[in-house]
Length: 134
Image 1 (cartoon, helix red, strand yellow):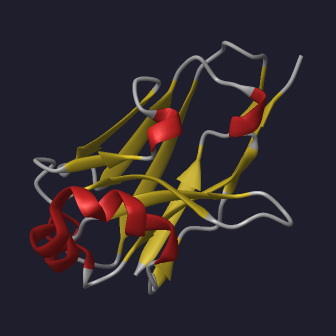
Image 2: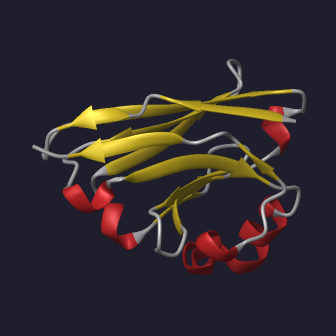
Image 3: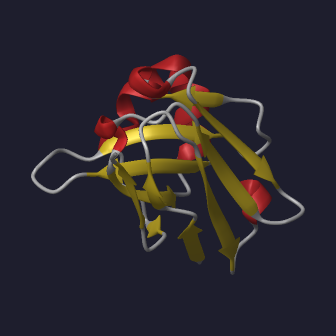
């Protein structure tokens, strides 16, 4: 399993970035994928998750309406379009997956939102730094 996150950078408040998570080494279209973020000294946050088909999507409340997750199973890639960025979005962003995610989505539905940051993900990308600053 390999996940490669990219697309981070420095952007001014109100700006946009698109993160990509390219996957290889596993059957990508069988796995839900999550985006998480981490600020040193703070708890990890689950930002968004998309089911294997793309039919179920979840967002952290603070990014709803600003971030959009999508996937292209033909390209083995998940995207996170981030608009109207705020300074509080500054973090290292990771994509991650685990064999249990689809089952969690089916069992918990919308409650998955509150669980994203605490799940035990087996596979992680290397992280990409997003800095929102003027």
